[in-house]
Length: 358
Image (cartoon, rainbow, N blue to C red; front, side, top):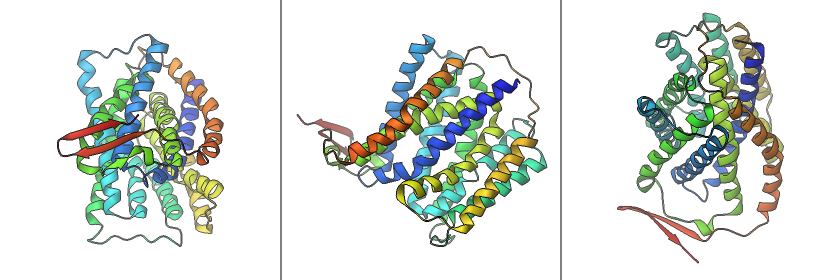
């Protein structure tokens, strides 16, 4: 595997860390106006449609072979749809600190799976450095003002969050890699997002509360736009691009950086305090990720690509460079705007009903 090939993979995963790291605080702010499951359904519907349109423009085709259709369906439905539902339900039944900490075990689940099932080499030193990074994540999350509580009251939510971490590691990450040898990250992610959104829409009548969309604040609409373009399209396609070029284990190690970026974003934009233990936690994450990436050697053959994914990467880099500063400037404009679409949404027992108000 060439150095240039790997450098592109690392760059894609840095984009993932930046977009997903800022995503948590931005998206959470929209839950005041939009139920989480409805938010996710809208987000991944638009993401999937836009990604497939980009795929058609750049690759002149969005075809999926019949023999691969079920594999793509499983990755999309379990890796995006069911995972999102599990994460949201688990978060509702436990504390935010518990949820974030449990989901930080995702790289460890992924390493165990690819090591035991996929036979991808993961050494003892790599496990040590991943555990070191996990300790760093704990120090960042458990600042003095946050308490970690494991009790019978939070046990259901903790277990559901643990299952969500497993789904993210196995179905969304590990199961996608064989498909990335056939399809570009752009094409595969487009289909997975569409399929995942269908699962989320099925859950909306059961888990969402009635909401009138024309009463949703401009800040929430901006958060939805960020979740669609930045963390949705750019972040997810970049993640699959990283898996394609670096493998499952190396790609998931980068996920340890996300809490660190989240803390920095909250400090810069929300003026939250940074504590000494969080700085120490960030140092442990950097040390752990550096050690794991430096020593990790994946013992797998290079499989010739059937589809050139360079177009996908050019799209990602172009979208990211043009969108990042634009999106933050839009936050200032939208915060003073009172314009909202005049649409109402009401889930009911018989399904989902839309009313367009003129």
